[in-house]
Amino acid sequence: MLALLRRRNFALLWVGQLVSQIGDMVLMIALPFYVYQLTGSLFHTGLMYIVETLPRILFGSLAGVFVDRWDRRWTLIASDVGRAAVLLLLMLVRAPNHLWLIYAVAGMQAVLALFFAPALSAITPTLVGEQQVVAANALQSVSESLMRFIGPPLGGALFALVGLTGVVLVDSTSFIFSAALLLLIGASKQHVDAVRRAPAVGTLWVQLWREWLDGLRLVRERPIITGLFVTCGLFAFSQGLVAAPLIVFVREVMGGTALTLGWMAMAQGVGSLLGAGLVERASTVVDPAYLIGVPLVIAGCIVLVFVNVPVLVVVLPLIATMGLFIVGFFVTTQTLIQRHIADQYRGRVVGALGTTTALMALLGMLIASTLGDRVGAVALLDSSGGLTALAGVVAVVMVRDAGPTAPPATAREHCPQERPAGLRV
Image (tube, rainbow, N blue to C red; front, side, top):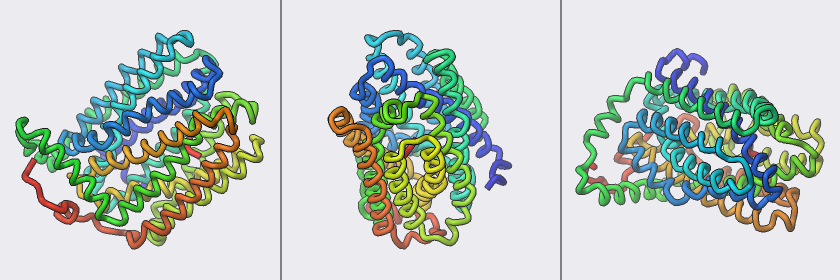
């Protein structure tokens, strides 16, 4: 796995993402606590998550179509630079009447991120080769785990010492660093040629519509991809239920602070770091349905335990254990999409998955924001644990016969009708 870092282009991508993700985690820990500190309201805290989710629902699938048409390296760079600039607006927030600015920045950040995620997923196989996709995804999971290890205590400490301004500067700088490394990556000739063959402007919107429909057909006609969409949708719904209530749970039930939430994310990062080292080996002998489903069942059960035993010395090892298993879910899901969807369709399928999970997450957030003050954070977290376990059962049933080393399919296999050229808990 670590041998992939000898590949210059992938190493540049990986290091840039590591630094950028640390910056993201710093802000992710601090900003919800800042909103709750300003308002004392679960509703307003949850509203921030809802604002971040809406662009994914409205434009996520379409963004994937553009990603399949544009140069992916420049798409990643533009997204990083744009997010670095937008974040600086948070430095103007000083009082509760500035909440609208937090929501505006969250929305703009989400729009720019719509193009980054599918472009990152689509470009990875072109940098490492199809046979090393599992190792690449596992290594990217390592970077996320390191981020969870370093970012949370840094975010809690920065927020306590210098407030939101220091946190914003760290995250904005991390985006610029990532963009600078992406500039050094060589372009993929295969995708550049595809971009040059894009249709003329006069046919653009008709072609976009056809390409978008082609992506949806792939999801419907390939049972493995359909199973992934259902599983990820259920998991996203469970995460929507927990987004804002987790802040309240840590603060009101556990009596903690932003630093407590940081320790919890850090514990998950430690477990994920260990799991990332095992998932590549497990992928060669274990059916993907079990690599996806079993971790979700274990994660759901762990949530049900620690929510009802809210003692930090109990919670931290449980969350670390959850991180050890849950990494298998993320790496295997990503790998199956990359292996079963041809390069020119990956962006729109990942975009469609983002829209699906965002819609389900929004549903969970709306329920949590509406019922949260009535039923309490503990009840919502219990529901989240049960739904996570259910998503695991669904994966075992639906994601069958993928094969641990399924070869990538051709473009014709994926296109039903050839077109003219054109802290998780």
